[in-house]
Length: 395
Ligand code: SF4
Image (cartoon, rainbow, N blue to C red; front, side):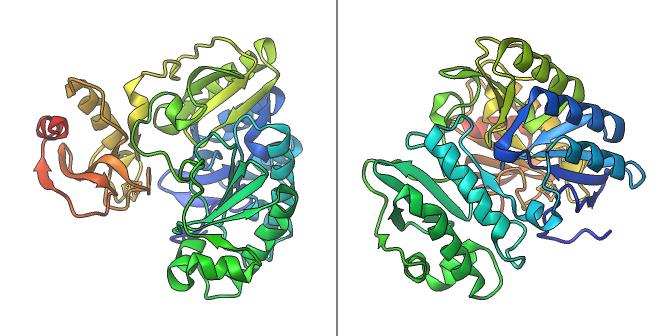
């Protein structure tokens, strides 16, 4: 099994990583029943490394699987309804839904899943859709849809233009946009937008692009700036529809997943909802505490993004998660926005811009980027953690 840059793992296509095999599980509509969560916890405990990761696409990842244990793991998850039987459909099933969808959003999600299932096999494995309720931030995706008064707005990755559609027409519009993408050179939507322009792609799909987002809507895209509290959408703490628990660095243990399942069954509606903001929502639960998970929306760890660095990646130049926690201890005030520590300039933990980015050069040494990405030119280099903390607090 070869690790290919840019390729996306699934349940049927494990990826070789430094930690044996990695598989990605895509619960339909980013939702698990308590029973499904227990099946996953048991299977991951038996076959994986004891930890489960939650990705920015609201998928789950299990690492540490061996080739011998993989078939049993796949069979358990398929049996629990956590994967499509068709590997091609499973590969394309990339949709980030609202964590607590309204009936209209849920119906649209199901229609969009059908569009992805029926899409040509040539669709890139990383291609994905995201749908947001009108008042919520929309995660980044190739096509970003948002419910709006009287219909749906559509944006393309890398483009500012917005098109509108009636909700009932939106799935067909997405199918035409996929056809327009596949009609051009191979690549993702952002590349097509760069090369052809969003307005041209919309036009080929029979849609008319507006020059800018309608004024009543917030711009779509990954949340940047304050990452703690309700400004990033339903995430952590007491919420209108339940309770959210955050996963530090997007990781939870197998026992923690078991506890979430027990809480959902005993106090909630029996389901767990995965968010792209690295949290799990328990609808109907009023208060929850699970060891190792974040239940306080003011917890500064919610502002952190960090890859494993040298503790899990051959390209990592420092143990960035440990050093990120050490850095928090040096700050006199919470970070003024999203704080991204990256093991190298690739920036896997947060490909989008962040208020502050520290890129590891060596253990304990970082380059600083403000309001940018890990690959951007740094303002300063060779900073110790204490020096980085002091520079970060400069306004
Ligand atoms: S950012 Fe670099 S060190 Fe971190 S996971 Fe990606 S490739 Fe590895």
